Image (cartoon, rainbow, N blue to C red; front, side, top):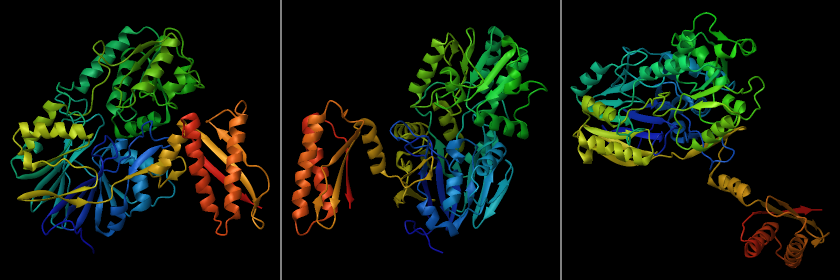
Length: 560
């Protein structure tokens, strides 16, 4: 069984395949006593620069090469950026067992059920008081508060000291669900915490994050003041918020209909786990809701982030088959924009206003949302309770990690004991030292509708070029035996120039390419690849000189 050659004797290896320098794709690896413990396996949702890409996952090459050392996959909670990559991980790497808790188990089972080509390992459901023992390592769990139920930090008890992986958390003294186990955090702080990795998402935010229970009261108040039909959008994974919306509907005598596949699935899982508890008759079908009075109607939808195919977006643009907006409707966004999503959200809001609909978003007037990630006071409290000797900020863009480092210094962690890492950087830690030992492969892997791809930057560059500059193809038909052109080259332009009206330009370019081809065909060492490259180089320069544009050039040679 091979070892990680980057690590010295007694050193523990810690690195991320995703989750550092970004918000998403969380996949962390702990190497202890030549055993590999994986924490979370998430996806990243692409921004506008990743044309045609559905999801981004980590490169699992290192895990594949070392799969015989993998003990298991440990899941902190059920958000997509922590469990969304599990099907793709299982397609490449043999994972002996998945450890998850509560609602995460249901969500993982739903997700794996959508992928028929996967051999599903055992899923072990842990409780907060469970412990698991491996070779020289004991693992325990600490319940924390987040925007989804059953969020657990993970503790690795080793002979070098304790390592604490917080997962996503915020400090909420009046949570909707169970209280966080602050006693366990304090106990951890008094028992030699060697290293902590902690959520950095809101490390730049100074103010306190309001309690989830306050949002529930605000939603109740809104529902009592709104006379007509309510359409409310939130994250499908926020089960606490969904329950609050159902309670507000029941308080005001409204029926609730659900639209959006992910929302329907989340509610089903929430009811099974007991986090969502609608009274009999509250939830009605899409067919039944049309017969309910508008003032007694609540429609719960996906699309709080302006996703083009989500229910709210289709309602806003008038393409939803069952729900059409009516003057007097009120749309509530019970969410905040994820970075990068403001433009599509604004587009949806503008469409709703065009439909003469009232729109309420989170802000000073109405508390319709709160973050599930702790701000600076929360992060400082966590550091103060756990008292780690060494610290690695995780789960955040680079500036967030840097801000979290400053917070750790403020509460007494020595600057030299803090590492800011990128994905793939291996931290080697033991009782008296921490260092960056080297790097493992951790590039992005892109997934589109056809499945997992080995798309690299060249493919995305080509997609970007096509979208911005267009395509210019030239087709040559050659007599392979006689090495002569059978006719004049044919030009095809898509998204570059309009063929009609530019006949002179296209004819001139075709004639010049014809001359290049005839010259090359006469050469004794004629090579088709060389001819294509000559044509591409010539056209790129010539077209740019004329048009100041760089379309994708595709020479096509047909041999007859």
